[in-house]
Length: 305
Image (tube, helix red, strand yellow):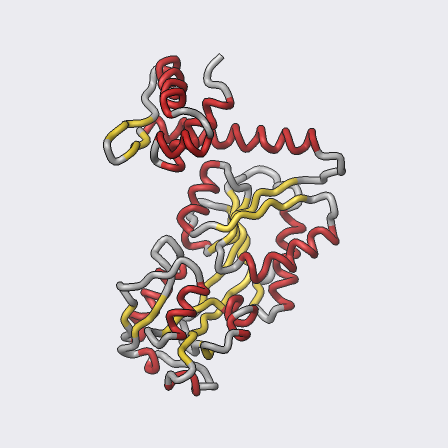
């Protein structure tokens, strides 16, 4: 009976990578075999999943629905296999997507607390940008995501904390001496560095620059916070950084000086988001409690329940 799980994996991989050849290489099968298997599914179901062209493949409208359902099926099968193969008692498993500007600086302490409070709960964490987190939540690849709530409409949202923004500048920059906080006037006509536009932080920085009269660099977009800090250290511009990064890692770097922004809109809310409308996911409440407890211990402004 078609499609098989292997065929679903082929289709999902082609969709993710955008090319049959690359997908075949990753899956360790020949490209003709991969193409034949997908064509067989299309023929049996009477639909076209991909439109092929020289630039790669384009998913059809019907194909998008097929792939979304296939991702959910594969995720459920992975969960089943894990539950059946694990020798330790498990009281739940959550697949959590998280912004890379949050994950490394908050989650180690959160996961530690979760394991102390509920040892059997497994949390599988993956860091992705805002756009991919949204896609992963829609497709069922994630049960929950930790992100900025305004970027994920039609979700169930548990607001956790508010995070202020800082700047990082070269040690010889005039702003490095401003120990009382950087104002909007300080950023006027300054070149501002941020992440690429697949991240929410980029949009926040563009709005901030417009408010302050600054200019966002169109010559350099970082893929990590470390990369824009290094650019700022060279004197190219001013890096805008989230509070967690600034206080958990940035302050230990000697090539830049970090200063808080004292501008009204220089902050962002962080929430735990899901699409499930029925009963809470197993372990969801303990995760929320742990996130709030750890965030408060780090000095963040935590929202009440």
